[in-house]
Image 1 (tube, rainbow, N blue to C red):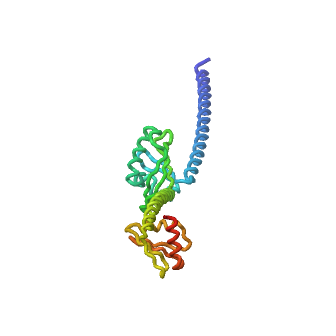
Image 2: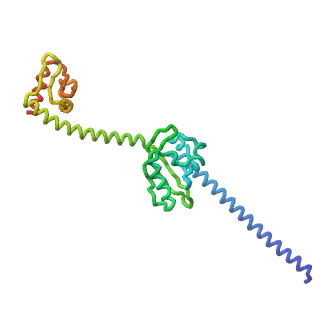
Image 3: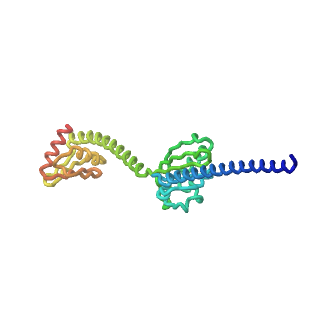
Length: 259
């Protein structure tokens, strides 16, 4: 075999090797395209979930920049996506008291995902300056320094809780005042410290200063059918009745209850 024939065989062999490489490259390209398509579908799926979740959701960068928000975030903060994404940092949206603890959580979470609480309450300040009580849910995005933050408005819930506490407290105070007034009224009636006006439509009880309000609570709690209402002054209690001669009935009932 001469040198020319060897060169032809070598060229043919190299050409086959190149064809194999091209085939492998095409297969790799096709595989990459499949992976790219799958990644795009996955990204679209997560974006759809992100945009349509029922609560305010945002992606937070390590430097506290808000890189992405959904429509609910616009509603709760009052800021549009254009105003927020890549431009605002999340501390701008919260009260100084909330930011103090939240910054600590932000830093701890990036050292160890479990080092900071996942759920906590904070106070958000919207674009109009309104302060809202919110429940935060924050978690790190695996393999990144980014975090996913969800915000739920619990302002009305907090108001209801506060009102309930006030009502319970008022109820406790009412019972204490009622018990104290019962003792005071018993003492007053036993000592006949009262005045009656038969010509008027009310019973007047003259009491020591400060007792009248407590006495009014007791009278109202007894639910006299004749009583339309009570007016308590500093030292005078007026019991408004349906008719003048009801005074005697009320007085006798009071005596029966407290003698």
